[in-house]
Length: 336
Ligand code: UDP
Ligand code: MG
Image (cartoon, rainbow, N blue to C red; front, side, top):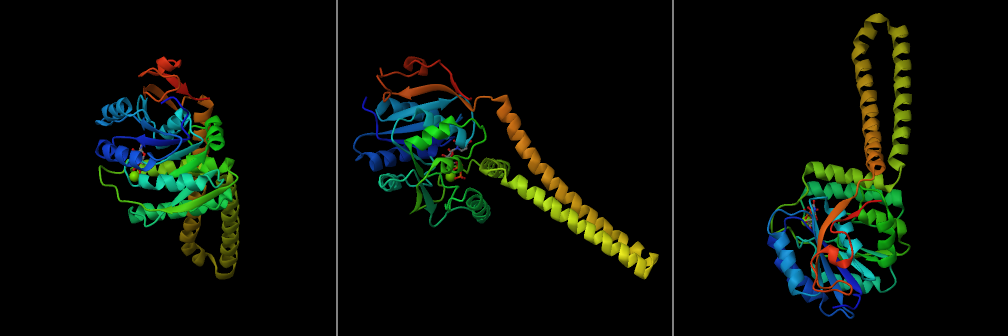
């Protein structure tokens, strides 16, 4: 299959052996009718289960399937970026491997894209995640909406379609801690959303623990803008003003009611102190998040290493199996 595919479907895979077979069947079923052809890029994000052999087998068997094998686990967004880098379609669709996003929705996304949009997001209805995850998402979506000014409701849902220029622009971005849907909206002029169904995860567990979720939230927040930093300054100023006001009241009350009253007030002072300290620590932590990311970017480490690209759908391809065969170094790195 040497013609350039019109549509690329990019799927990050991290220990998803339980879902891969069904995913493959359903994507092929849903995308089979696409004219001209599509390509399915499965990015292995350092799985330790049977996912890699399954991806290899699929790439061997179906010409439209390609596997990008990363040499270890870099996280969902880095994995998707690795896939985007390999994609050649004019419309690029991303989705999760765990079948929470039904592949049957891909044609609808593509159809909507063809009406002239740069990015088509999706809203999960009904959402099949825990209450905690839903609340966290709701809060995040609100913040992002305010900060980017782009109306999108469900940033967490990775079932999305991007136009080629938007993907190219995203690939030019050098930051390491990216949150792709937000990044995409920076470059999109026409965006829309469609409602898609959402299934509960059937195989395995969510790959996001509490700490990863927190880190992802910070990635998202710091990738939006410096707005949180500004909000922090404002909050700090307000807290300081409140503290000053309190102190004035305490002084006045001491003068009016005497020292005995003031001794009781010690605890109020403590409370105020703790309040201010808390505010400062929140601010410092936030600052640290930015500084940490700046440090990462300054070090400019590659976001991921591709160990191997497998599949037959490569340009002027032999039935080749290594990235070396397509003129790349055996390990291609993507960083700066
Ligand atoms: N994933 C990945 N690398 C990771 C974690 C997740 O490639 O380090 C993939 C995973 O295989 C799945 C998608 O990202 O295809 C979403 O992961 P998951 O379903 O665990 O996230 P959730 O649905 O809980 O947000
Ligand atoms: Mg999932």
